[in-house]
Length: 440
Image (cartoon, rainbow, N blue to C red; front, side, top):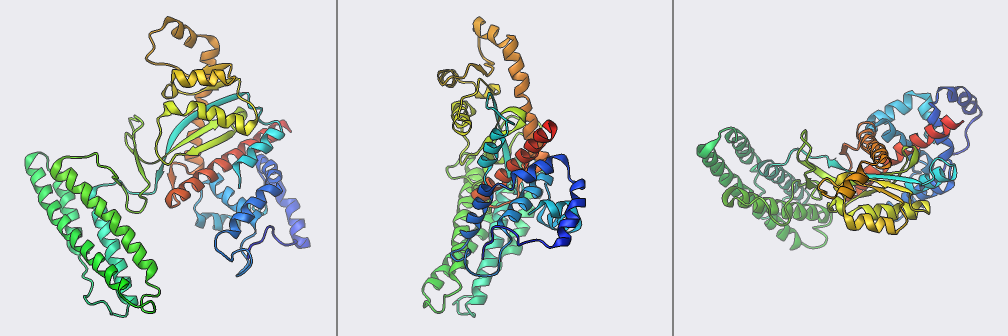
């Protein structure tokens, strides 16, 4: 059963609060008032009621909506795990007092309080990595065989040994081949290639046998009566979904090792997070990243006004006018100044932004030969705008270091969006609080 707010507090709790308030950080005092917003609480309350069919009316009482919102934001403000969050909130009176969704609503409130006016906009992209190990075909085949075997064993146990053939465990043989491939990878030249191909051939053979076992188990369960296969439907769905992903890994491993093909349609780099993309942004320290592209755009006072988590990585050159339109939709006006890095430059996008009413568009064109363009980029206002733009890189660094956007700990596409959204909300809450505290 869902609850909007915590019940009435006892007298002694109010007395303790008076002393605890003195321990709060300045931004927490302002953020506390922002989080009293009824619309914010209503959004969380409605989301809680949609978790399951009868969440809103039946079962044990859930944590109140206002407390859930504050706990999640505190977790991302401090970049804690759930275990650390629980421990700190239990031990720290200030945190317990503070923790009693909608990023859009926070931005509206910041605008109402004069923290942002929407006159300036800067935008940049980054990668939030999914929580996976570095992907290799051999390690994914090993993971897939382990999960498939474990799931088949669970089905065998629940069926009461009614399967015609006993499920064979081949994980030991597969793990030996995975280790042998890793060892052979240290040897360079034709000799090392031959050793790897030999071990991959064995690994693929064992994996196909596991896949054949999975197909047989699914067929046998489908042939059982409804009463017998009750409780095994979910396991069979897991088995079928994982088997499909393992078949794709077998296909791409065979193409890469024996045919030399690295670009294959439907290529995946994780069995557990299949939505993960391979993204190269030209970083010397990390040339290849595995995750999702995220766009962050800001206004005055370092307030993030909008963010996007892209299902498929777009080109940065296609994103600028969309950012201006999002700014206009959220804040009710186009910015006077809009700036981004050179990756965003597109003559068509720049003109479209100017046609919408943006007075100054500051995006450098690194390949220009036009003397007029070079003069524009050397102008005082353009250089000043670019100096302000670099703050967006600092904001992304803070989001990653302070709020955990370096790596997503939630699963799936929706988990990625939820993780990024909570991190952005936590950062926005701190900056709104700091701005209001400085004004006070």
